Image 1: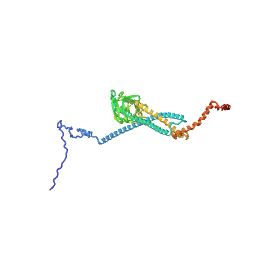
Image 2 (image 1 turned 135 degrees about the horizontal axis):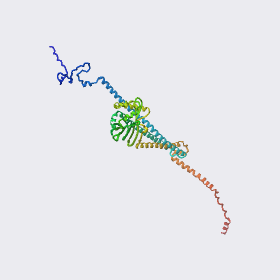
Image 3 (image 1 turned 30 degrees about the horizontal axis):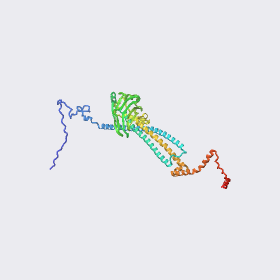
Image 4 (image 1 turned 30 degrees about the vertical axis):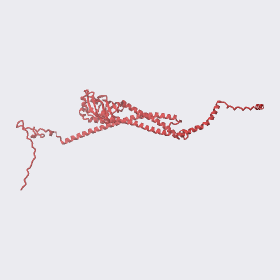
Length: 467
């Protein structure tokens, strides 16, 4: 018996038949699912065939790989620029903190030295006048008071330095995460979103932009008013102000900051740049000037801040002005211009926020000044008292063993008994000379004793005989 052969199973794709042509039997149509490919005479795309949108849009593998690589490279470049910008803004805040620390420390140190010199002079005068007098404090008490005053002096110095460090740290963080971030974002977006600003320049509302701001301090920050005027050289460009008040930021918290940007004219930005650009290929760095005015509360104390921030922009990083609306939308060129501008001003030891123009008024500043003044006066008083007690201790240590200072160290009981004994010994010896002195003073001789009268013997005898 021969084995039976299994039937072969073939899988075929069934393609539907083309729809009949509507123009007649003799007319060929290529609009159906299947069309007859008719090669053209010169080669290339067959005639009479409709290109499939799927096939036409299918990218070339090599081209798609190149495009993906370009996109990833562009994204990595943008992220690198953003990271470098944040790093430079942090360095700018640290540089400003160093300048503020140097200025505040020298002011506080000069005031402290003046108070200490006055206190030292007063203590020296008091010690000189009381040189031959009895010390106010005993030796053990002088040592104890001197040590206690030295400890208080260290506490006062520590509180003063701690106050300065805390104040400088707050200025550093606020400048980095609020003022510098505000100036850089507005300066970059004014170029990247220039078409939006120009379209809304003639409207009363202007463009409203929202930013997420961060409070880096450990205290509440409340902003009741924020107004900034943006200019370049002598050309006013725009005005930025808050639309929703107040802005309350919790410690280490974030919140939305909504700003209204209004241009003075549709061509205000381009006109300002045209005035300062003489050659795009130079390393010229211009600054956008932000005049700040803010009011609110910090640590539940009112403040009114006025400052000037100058955002540096390297002009050669920007394209030709005529192509701005199309070439600046991605924001890469403005960011690079700001990055290169920051590097340029940091080489010259300059910062975005001009510390000389920083002015903070209100109860917050007044309370800080009063506290620092109190610490300086307390240091001066403690130094003066410490010098006085040290002088008392020095007198006790240098006193020879027979003086009153040495007798005080022996004890209160023995000293009192010795004093009473010396007084009793001095009493009888000093009485007789005092009487002699009084007689000499009156120039009178001492009275003579009366002469003895003789007895009357005759009269006695006669009386006896008579009896």
